[in-house]
Length: 420
Image (cartoon, rainbow, N blue to C red; front, side, top):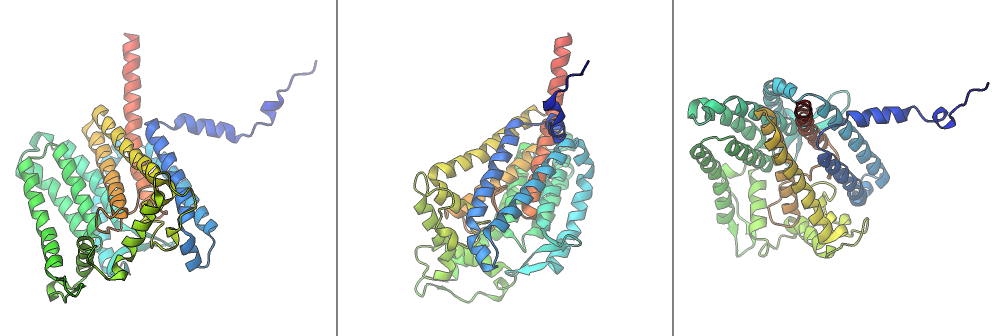
């Protein structure tokens, strides 16, 4: 008697089983996974739309940048998947090692890194010949180490010597190493660290004193920018020698451009700001539609630092608001995770990484609409891929690792309740 053969099973590709196995092993907060999908899809659309001038400059096709971004997204999602499969307690074990490695790497970058606009921010990785901003590694290492210290020192957290100093010193070291090449990133790292320290019950007086000390150089820069700006001739006077080294003139120039936008007649300084304003004004409520931006041909770095301006132009106020909602939703899910996580390290780690990503997103959006001075930070998971994109994916993978373990603990608790 002939045996019945299931034709559907015979011709079903073997990779279907692989896909189902991957799906069954993918755990963690489903909303955060959905956010990753939404942001990466938005990234493909906007990067493809905004790289026309870049493609023309280097005699390439826009499709080549689309495929490159797609490759970064695939690599990034793989990084998220493997990072979320690792038990987050492993990150506590390597936190100190990564922190100690990041310090000499930052020093090496400042001394021998690739130089652009008077700043050494990148090093070139051997073999793969890819540039990396060591500040991205330093940020991740710092927040892992900071979370570890906050979780371990809760018994002495109010003490200045035993609780405050061991936490603020690493923050100060990393911020001082980042600042010479990228002041805006150093300020974002410092602000995120202080916010995390406040939630971690560090003495408020110590935090306020730190903020006061940190504001001194900022106030000094703003004062110099105001004092040495000639309102009559509409141009910057010659700065004293102490303020003419490194990136300081650039910082002062950006502050002056931001403060005196309406009075500044230097078209070169205002070019990027004005083009971003035109893109925002063109957007209206619903935008011009995908791929219909005109300012992408005129706005420098429209695919990275000013990608939010292109989003506003193509998708309007509604699309821009939706993007902001997505980042705030990510923050909400991480705060919810912080409250549910029974272990301090995981709770602080999820909160720290979510804070830094959302604050970075807000800074990027603020620059695009001229609410903040130009910072040079990218829009997480949306701007064109690079080392920053991959480290963002790694951070999200770590957050999902915490979520996966919380999910497993909740499942075990439910089983115990059912058995009882």
